[in-house]
Image (cartoon, rainbow, N blue to C red; front, side, top):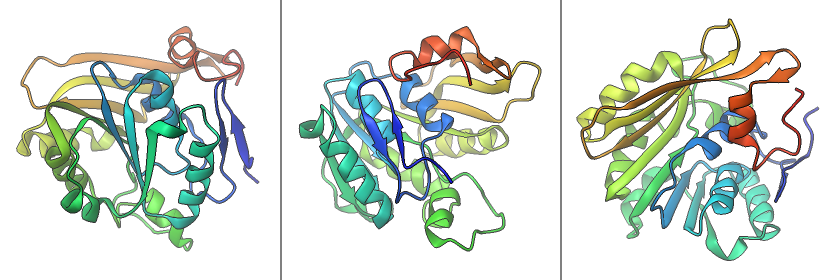
Length: 239
């Protein structure tokens, strides 16, 4: 059974009711995305509230967090309320497709660890299916909605499976969002990459390209991963 809580340096995540628990993908995106000049941030599919809390720790921004799953909203609400930044985080129990049409606020940064199993066998658990599959939020809907909600100099940051990278990038380009940063995530030295972190803006430019290795071996995080997540993890020296 998964732990019902996860302790970070400056906040604690309660996750007993959430469909998806704290995972490396969310921590990576929350630590990696560019928060420069981000005064308003939107976390799409906040789940436990992990990324929203990481960005609250990293910035002085006002943060909106959307979550469609009622059980996850209960965890996120508790986690926000118990954090040092509760006055700056607003939770919306809503579908992103409806939210984008009715919400007047525009954002400097939109982040999302989106549903990542596309055209695959669905789980019998409806909450897990919504969280893990693109039944309620496709990549196309996420990108179109983000384009609508971004300020002109704004950015969209996501972490997705490596094999979806080209499709996501092309869909974003067609919506007027251009890749400005790409970091390929390698789970362990010598292994093939499984995830990629992408950042888009409305300006065309040569993207900054890099890679990040999580583990040097089974019991040791890489130095770059340890440095990236040092502000959050209590211990980043053993797995």
